[in-house]
Image 1 (cartoon, rainbow, N blue to C red):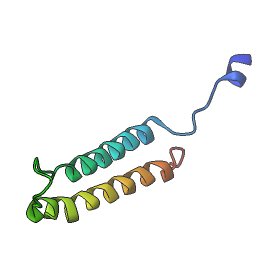
Image 2: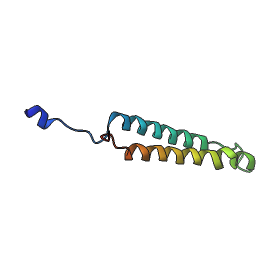
Image 3: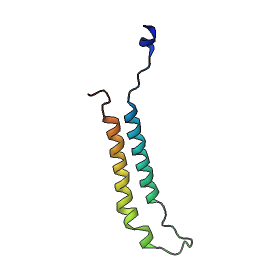
Image 4: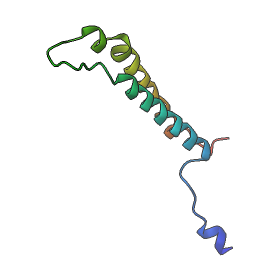
Length: 81
């Protein structure tokens, strides 16, 4: 009886943690997509590399999707049947 009373109960279920890790990985991929675009010569400016579709549209969308997955993992009720 005492073991049942002292048993720690986690706030989230195992599925919530898996979804949370997937969301964090998606966020990391989005930030990796934002990197680059620099040049060796500080006097040159490469507009195509800096303002590319990948950095301006794709990467922020991936980061926002990762935040959405992370919020879903927090809001998902593991005890609902």
